[in-house]
Length: 115
Length: 112
Image (cartoon, rainbow over all chains, first blue to last red; front, side):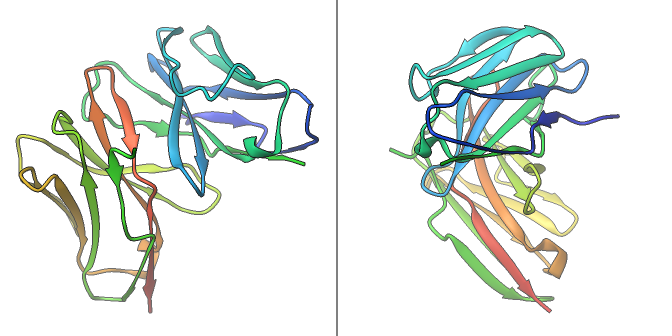
């Protein structure tokens, strides 16, 4: 079975540019999560979806960040305009329903560098 | 304020010895705790979990201990192997929707 697939793996862009990160969750998983990893803050939850509906976006840092899940097999995280402090590794994860033991299945991450 | 804290950013252990990774939490409402392991350039992978109603869970070389009164959990790896070298994240679940709150991680290095 394919795991969570994220693209791009690496993105280098200039300040002010729009960045779009993509995620394909594991088929059949009803929950999708976007996390950001930085040295200062570790792994922090940005937003999660249940059955394509955003449930909690309180972790989204500001209005420059937006996330969508148009269908069960695809989600995007968009940053517009990007800033150097957005540089981080962004992880997408999915999990099945019911919650079970809380295990999340993570993608390999998208490393973003904003110059 | 961090609800899940891993106060040791790094730990170095000799192969064959025990590795003990520690984690403290502040919210007594957490009902599930997990450990994840992360290799460079990969996503975190689930390692072991424990319910708040238990105080120990064992899976092969890995054992997690939970001390609710101290709001503390630990991961023991015995014996440690070089392949265990990775960053270990402690995480806690709050609520029924599976929202995980992670610590900042501890980088474990197991020396041959």
